[in-house]
Image (cartoon, rainbow, N blue to C red; front, top):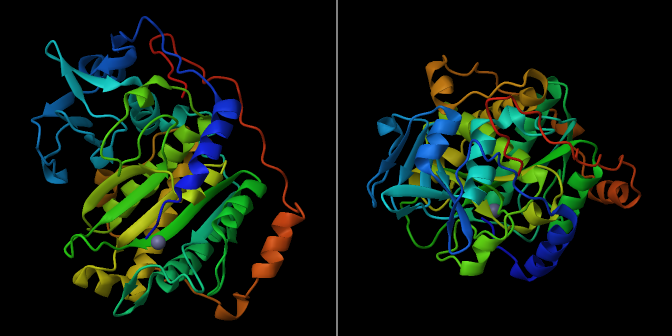
Length: 398
Ligand SMILES: [Zn+2]
């Protein structure tokens, strides 16, 4: 469970404007930009042609289920909902219709669609040495509560199970907390920012007082500049005017999709989708960052699953495979596995990770000291060179 702290937003936005202002570069030959009230849109036909992929538009109000998805891109009329490669995703802006054409905002083409359809082309995607695992909450902050326990404990356990799996793949792992104590959100982000070539993976469980039957997985990355978050109900007209963003937006979306496809592909949970939010840990991290909501503690059946050690082991494994797929982007330069690929595979090898409890020390003070004393190498500046483009396709640089 996460509560957005909005007072940071103005500061973060201003900083982003100054440091990360870049324009979306679209080659004129490939894209016909349609201006509506000064805002840029691209047609679904144009997107399908560019990616050489069939795309469909479902009637408004349609709820696309995974089982009915036929095409890599399935939009819903008048909605922000879209299925990309068989997983649900939420656009920043709804699909609009004009003169018989369905139009997608340029922001979404650059920030939501491109990083998922061609993640291997994002500059520095998959460049990972360190995975910063962030078990949500801790100490006085219990997070969501169910009859079987607290979110803070379940999240920590998943991170503990995940760590050796990542280490076995040669990745360095730092945990923002290793015990039941609270670490301020800005410190969690600082830990990720201070580590060399890091990614940030925050682990949470969900809760709601609105719908006791709500279930499923969702994953968040930071909302692009000027765009509304997924939970925002309406869009201000000025929000559309800002198009620039950072390269990390693309990397974060790619990481989000890699982990999410693995989660859905390995565990039969409801697909709530790939979403956007301005949660503090996503806003304050300058490295690719995601926040996973691994199911609802407020739903009876799901809370029973989350309370099971073996199920949490499965969750850790699925997250691990997703991170591995993201990492492989940097090496193989190939698109990662998708939900359907995972489902075709025989089941995950049943390797319950061995947890060396005695090695898990309470290291809050030492960790904060490390960050304060800048013992980690400073993050390498993001490359400013655009991705190389092939003659037959334009590059969308977020
Ligand atoms: Zn939480």
